[in-house]
Length: 114
Image 1 (tube, rainbow, N blue to C red):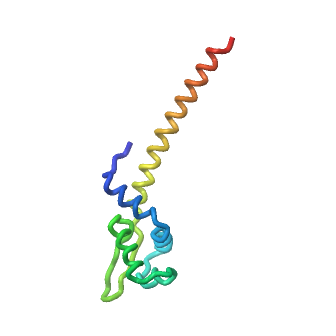
Image 2 (cartoon, helix red, strand yellow):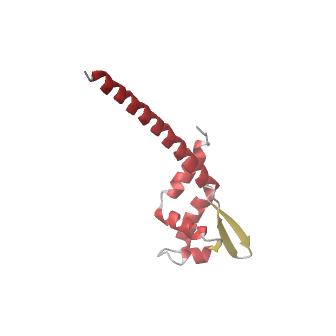
Image 3 (cartoon, rainbow, N blue to C red):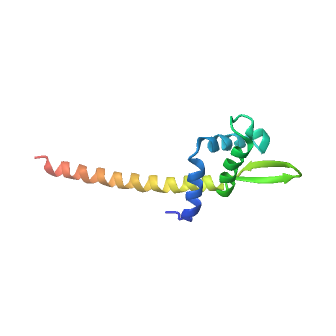
């Protein structure tokens, strides 16, 4: 299995746990956006949206570029790819275990038949 630093995965999953942050990432999937444009659809203050953005930045899911007073954000997919790889490794692990259990149960059934 691929080993990623647990603190990176923790930050990624914590950031993705919030529906507002997931919607922000969906918005950024369409391309770079300004902070003020990202904040418009939400019924919350700009400082509240900024807190969500800070969580996403700390997790490495977005990057920020400043030009004067304009802050632009861009989606960074690497942490999500790492999380997906971690999930995929465990999916394969458990599928293998269940396949082995299935084989074992079939063997037991075959031995019980007269």
